[in-house]
Length: 98
Image (cartoon, rainbow, N blue to C red; front, side, top):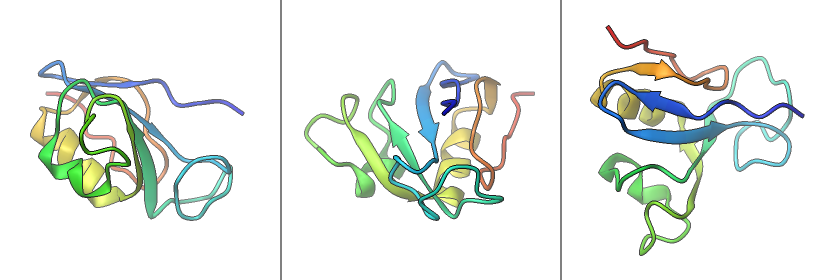
């Protein structure tokens, strides 16, 4: 199974965004045509838009965020200026930095 490359945004914010059979996502399978919820992991800083889904909210940069709606992930990417490098699962809009 291939994991997505870590997302790095224009302002330096980074996070892992994964969706596969072993991730906290919907559908919970590898190779889905589109995901509705995905797993975010280990953001470089506390991100308020994600905190509702934190597994360990007292360790916001050292935890995973399960079943995050793809629109929330898209909003986080937009807030941080778009993607400079990295990959997102199908369903998350891959907004590129301008």
